[in-house]
Picture 1 (cartoon, helix red, strand yellow):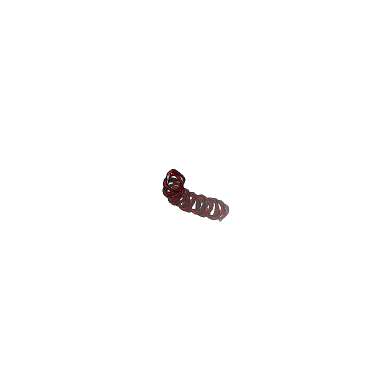
Picture 2 (cartoon, one colour):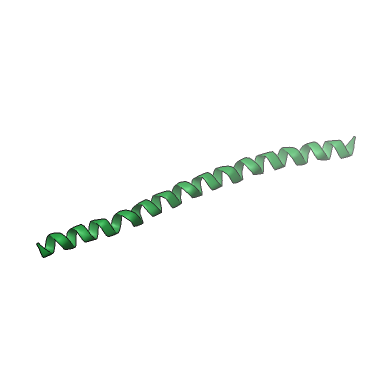
Length: 55
């Protein structure tokens, strides 16, 4: 009985950590997406500014 009880607790803990890890990865991917979006926008903005200055 003790073994099964431990197994149950282990599965419960594993499930909780798994959910946390998925949430963390989801947040991380969103953050990376925003960073890449900003990095993609910065050069276009600066080049627009430069071309306006030259004209």
